[in-house]
Image (cartoon, rainbow over all chains, first blue to last red):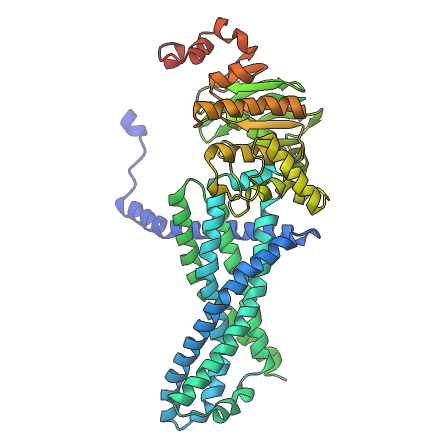
Length: 282
Length: 247
């Protein structure tokens, strides 16, 4: 009687298929879950940032920490990236006898793509990791709870100023990176590729317009939001001890590395669509 | 007055608080004692909104605060300050700036007035003249005292201490006990102290409540702890390994 009532065994192929689907679905569900939490955190920050009363003294401090201290790195990166670009592009242009386009092409790519991307990756590595480590350590040593108990909203005091600072300094550093990158490319072009300054800059204006410049700045703002969201989120969600701080710093660097490139791709598509619809059509 | 009424709190399958009832009267120093992991800290964290109960009510000065949101709790926290087991000083700020932190955020005092208030508060915890030191330059005992000075900066009505003497040497523990008594006397605060240090209970407490398996099993005077009929309480007070709690 008992045997007659027992459920029939699931065929092996169904079990295997279910396990396979589960193996693919689980990481995807985990990704969606994490993305949802990140967006909810961003929502909390936007709500706190809307308040009229902000901690401007902390914003000033963060501007110094995030921005001023990153200027030397942005300059160095700009010089090298600009130089590398000039050398690489020169080889191709030389084959087609189009070395006069060297300046225009280097400047165009630097303004639209390399400048914002280079600064975002630098900020992600330098400021993103630092922010997660700092907030994570504050969390595991009860400093964030202590701040809450002193009737101060930690999102407003610790996170919102970092958003302001990162967005503003992303712009400033991107402009610095672009200018230094183009200057670096022009110097390398002169000394290594025998393309003088006059020839280098003669085509810049025809290939770099205001739209390119503005799209670069919008991109750097989006990267600034991404860096601050990811780094603050992982800092705020560090529990346990030193090992968790290390793990979350690592997560921040990996997520920002991939996230910045993925966001850059999405923005490039959007940018092209907007350019085709509104700018090129005119 | 603080009232916890039928308060329940679980973490997953672990039922920490199982319907606790407790009233804290104005001006008294109440010690909540109990073994580690019985929910002593969990109880006081509900009062400042760091934890939300699963069921039950919390009343503060005749107002129910159980379902307050984060913004409403900001006002509760000005009235109810907490001293953490870990001193939790902001390590990017000096000792003086740590004490000044709540004053800068919640008062309109001038810089000179804030400096004066910081000096007063540091003097109250026997740390006068150490305002320029950074948190990593002072000892653990000093950090605990600075943490207390920061918590009293806004002159709260209630002070919650989470295991203030845990990990402290006997001399430091006595100093901290004396400070808790001093704060109650000089600032007229109502104190709730979470502890399992029976020496502190004997020195400081006006009243003691003991948590065991999610409920208060004793609520009375510290002098009556050793003569109570409750075997669990007697075992905890004597620190004996043998007894009903070992089962």
